Image 1: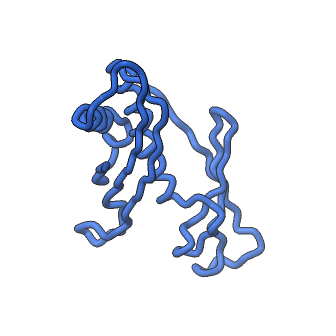
Image 2: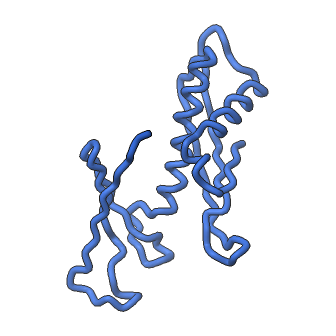
Length: 148
């Protein structure tokens, strides 16, 4: 078992607090390593374009967890991964209760292998399946997660 912390800081400043007035910008601090990230609502919801929004962070976190698990599964299977890139896309849409949720994340990983043991397409699919089954975050959410 482990704990993972993030500290959030938001201040209204001089602006009013009517819905279209108050600022959405805030900061995420990660006390375990001193890193921070400037965050905001998505621009569509009156946030700043130059900040990360929670929906983007959610997609990135799930894609990152999948990649890290894929690397671990590949290594334990005797494969050597040289590079892994992904363009992950999350879809925000109403669910069956008409609440807006990230209904689906589609990952588009491109993986380069080297060495004596190179997986074929079916083996790569098995590695992704295993990574998905073992990914901590994928096991924590209802979002449909797929890859191509």
